[in-house]
Amino acid sequence: MSYLIERLIMVPIVLIALTFHEFSHGFVSTKLGDPTPRLTGRMTLNPLAHLDPVGTILMILTGFGWAKPVQIDPRYYRKPKWGMALTALAGPLSNLLLAFAAMLLYTLIFVVSYKTGLFAESLSAIAGFFLTFAQVNLCFMVFNLIPIPPLDGSRVLGLFLSERAYFKLQRFERYSMILIIVLSLFNVFSRIIGTGVSVVLGSIIDICNMIVRLVV
Image (cartoon, rainbow, N blue to C red; front, side, top):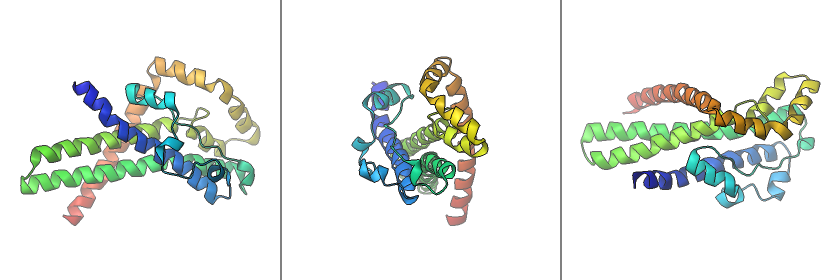
């Protein structure tokens, strides 16, 4: 029963994380002059516009999945490599901001509960939701920053590569999903994501504690 409840709780968390991630890609690409996200209906916070059915189900059940990629056209960018990198980075940064907001609420809830002693059990359950929300968003962030095409990290890595090396990396994209699946089977991503989430989450908690001490 508890497993079913956990999966049900994951549904809204995954939907929010995926939606903001993909919307942010489209938002930044549009700001850089590319009308493609708007023309393809991706400039919306409606989750249905961003969901890949198989990828979403796998994400909820296994923690590994994908959304429907936002179509962009780098020909509209003044500097294509910079435009690609900024558009790619927008997704993980949106998840980082969501995680930070969730952990700030998490910290405030525990402070209120400690100082008032009221609704301790209910507040603890709500705080647990925000902690899970933050962890899932950080998983999205860390996973997408891995520099393997078509993940966002490969677009960011392109800034530091020569044109020749960059296009070689992009041509590798047709085979990359096989590599991603193989690495996931050997739990390589689990170790990378776990370490990354722990480091970032620890830093966020420190910042949130500082903010709460200044305010409360």
